[in-house]
Image (cartoon, rainbow, N blue to C red; front, side, top):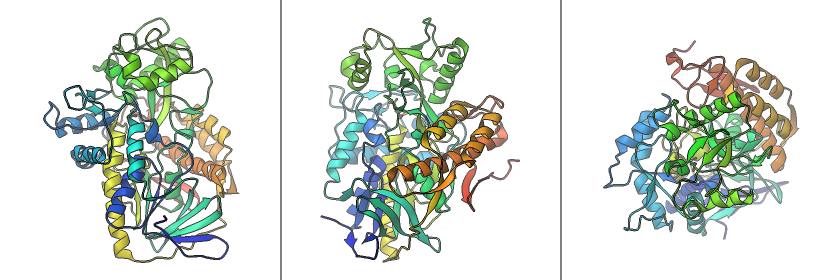
Length: 525
Ligand code: SIN
């Protein structure tokens, strides 16, 4: 049964809802459930295919009461990983609500691995000073989170094969969403819209992200005139399974393997992170990815290796990783796993507060698409499912309250919208060459030139929309990366290898008159 009301129309379909949620991963479904539980009529839109949540392996970072852990310790680790750009108040607020959010998920049916004594089994990942990662199915945490949320949302109006193409607004407030589905274009009139579209990994030729991670939410916000920030901080996961030149979504090799004793070595067996950081292979992710990149440049090898032969019961504890390796003819209990850094997570995104509210009335963002100030210049491992759950829930509550206050609205979308769009392979090639783990001024300039060669095209249909979204997002990443003339967190500049203390501030990117502009915070010249 549909919760959103149909209202007929001329030339395109029309419906009404109180809250439209764009995205069906952890943040989207947490938002949809909390809005629904506050009495809102909710419509949830998703593209076909799996979410990034489904593929998450390691787990959820959460402070479990009555352990050696504390909110203060988790906050300190998050701030240390974030390279000076986290918002401490946002981090504290999100971390402090983590346990309650995970407990709610358990009430919704999620089951996490236990330690045999009736408590959650806790593992460790890079940058964490404590064992605080809860997991499910060994290394299939995301699949369990998705299963539980899908089940809890079964009574909601969740539509697959729906591509949200435009946030419609008037006088600074949301009025709905232009959508494309199998029936063609349509509009959902709604005073509240929550972007929970996930990430942007398909800016690059190879990524750990599912096919749908094409920067949609960042592009929708930019096109609506809403600010994005910290987009230069694209996190490369140190260990993506290496399979020659294979492109598209590639399997992740979870960091939790290193938490359980696996080590990174090069082709001669030398340790990759020796002398790099006091936490060695469990240093924050940006440090380990950069160490691998440096080693690959020095040796000329195509990959390094994760040696998990010392991990107890690797096949039982890490069944997802084991299956991916076996499919490539590698047995992790007997052979080192070939790995390279892979585009994994956008630390930046649409600027929001910790309730998911953006600067536009009625527009919210939660999960990877949002920039709350939680991750700064480099996200701490397993803080993403945590943030998606906590901020997703809050965004749903805020959006429901906003809809109740606003009453009915009427959206008038631009049905003839054209957006600049570069062919996807050209864009991925240019991003992979010039905006990968290490960047420099010449490369970023070449990237920007290539992106400006894009020509306007209609955005109807998923592929055309995604190419336009990737192009807009790439322009924002390139602009932010060009402006940041220092190295910090995930953003490494070979021409500016040191951090500049004067630049420990986030800049803001907007689309103005078809051009991307970067606003520096006060104090940066
Ligand atoms: C992993 O399992 O290594 C990835 C977890 C994350 O991205 O937080």
